[in-house]
Image 1 (cartoon, rainbow, N blue to C red):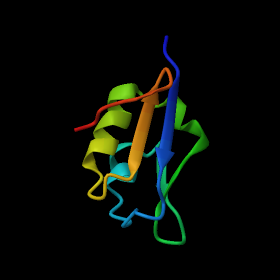
Image 2: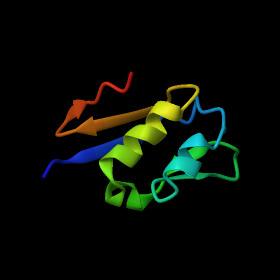
Image 3: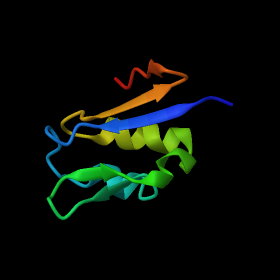
Image 4: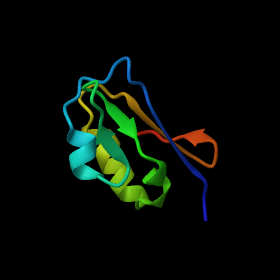
Length: 73
């Protein structure tokens, strides 16, 4: 088992909703128009998190696995 951490830079998020549509258990579109990481994000399958992060047009999502940043691209 590995430790996952998900970060989202809201200052660069464009609010495309791609992450929320691909991983609705991990991401949500906030009233401010940008995405946010849900508390249950770590319960999402790793591949689903990866797909959502890769879909981000501004690349504002970072995923860490066992403390190391995962290369998404």
